[in-house]
Length: 133
Image (cartoon, rainbow, N blue to C red; front, side):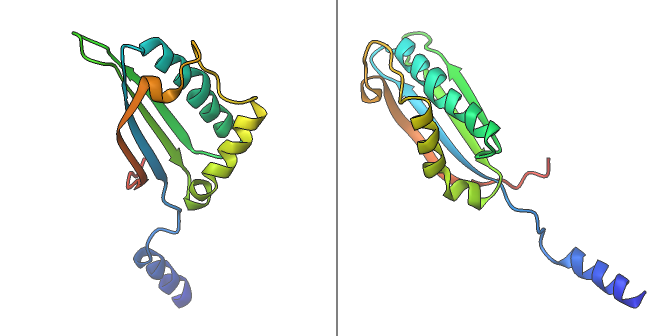
């Protein structure tokens, strides 16, 4: 009995053994009034890849948000990908490469390349979640 109590107390003092989630966050500004091209690119590439990655257990979750354009200001797209642990995060490039290949490459609207319609205004990798949800 003494060992059970000791083990229980030890577990309370040891940091959580559950792996921390890791996220990447990107905020994209749409350039040159190319909102249709940017939305097409992210809906038909980024979002589709995340849906496939979720099914393949390559990621934990993702968020895709579109804002604007409004009052002559450019539109913005917010992209958040969350990995269940560091192993998923470290294999992200390899795993997304496999998915891109399986989907037959990147899809573009009006043959405009990403550099023609987007500018990253914020990009942060390895955000560690401290949420208890």
